[in-house]
Amino acid sequence: MASMMEVDAPSGEATPKSDTGASGGSQQEKTLKVHPLAIIGISDHHTRVITGGSALPATAPVMGLLFGYQDGLTVSIVDAEEMEYSFSEDGKCGEGEFGGGSEDQQAQHKSGIRTKIDLHRKVFPMHEVIGWYRVSNDPEGGPTEEDLRMNNGKMREYNESPLFVLMNAGSQEPISEKKSGKEGSSKGDEAREKLERDEQLPLSVYETLVTVNPSEDEAQPRAVFVNLEFELETFEPERIAVEKVFKTQPSMVAATASSVAASKASRSDTEIRKADGKGEKSDEPGTAPKAAIIPPSGLDMHLQSIQSSIQAMNTRVAILIDFLKKTQSGEIPTSHKLLRQIDSLVRQLPFVMSSSNSRLSRELDNEYDDMLMLSYLASVAKAAKAVQGYTEKFRLVHETNARDVMRRGF
Image (cartoon, rainbow, N blue to C red; front, top):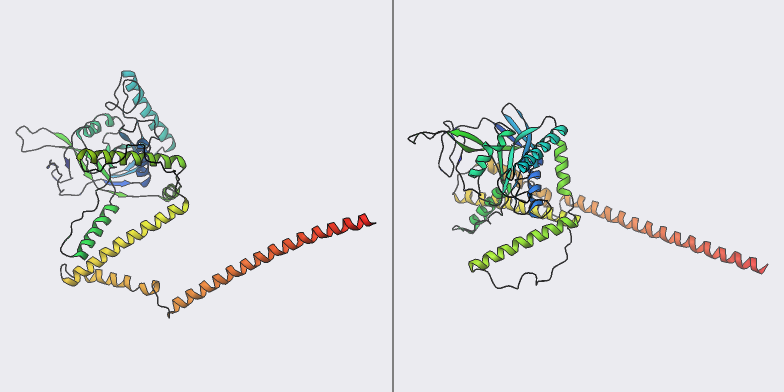
């Protein structure tokens, strides 16, 4: 893959900045809206490739087309469709340059992309190709020179000004263990950092901008990527579909593929640590007993959801406690507006954590007793019904036997 390139931030003069990016002077003109369905499509494509659920090899570049619509300066990215990267000499996809291979393979590659676009537009006539996406395994990676050439070359056949979406699928770095002078402040900083990391999507949207560097002797126009801000938008049917996807229980095949991918990742990390001389000695691969692969049940998924919710709540509580401690010690100026909001939140606690003598606690106990009584009565009724059924069957059997004896006697 090509080396990293510089990325500009939108500014009024539109001049190139340093390699690390620059702060813009004016706001961007476009309003960009990304729908969750497009994000799920991108992540699903990447998951299928790395777990072996796709015809592409695991090392193939993960990329595809973005579909949506544009209304003036408002651009909406609604859906994502995967596409093959290239053809190798043996006709398989995923190697070489984009659209590479022989002339017939290049024509087949372009025809396949056109077919996907036509099929998508038959179902959604209002959609058009907005741009393309690529998934990077480098958590701190950015667009490369190859991405810029592709955006200004091949992708302009489908859109005059395509957008480029880069998703960073690499593992995030753990929370820094830097500790300040006070333990409470350290916990608050860690909680704040964790909250910012969890709420940030590993997604970046770029567009190309032609700039001129006036510092050069012969100023030549050149294209650079400009990072765009975006917002999430969803429709009611889309929200229902996304919730259905999240609540779907993984099958045995998906659980097996995920387990295999996780084992490969852990094995590669172990090999890297051994190469660095930091790993410990371990047995040869394949000697450890393999545990049975069991897909998570509905209860497991429900407990995981509750656990993540409790962790998010603990993170936010730690931030509030850190804010109150810093306000009390004078490290930060007093914000009466925030203090009133925290006081309003704390005043709700008696309704949640009430004492044994409160009215709410007594009502809760009464409802709990009524529920236990109903459950007990239901159990008694069920047992009585079972006894009555057994008695009826016993009576029918003995009456039949008595009749047979009487007939034989006559």
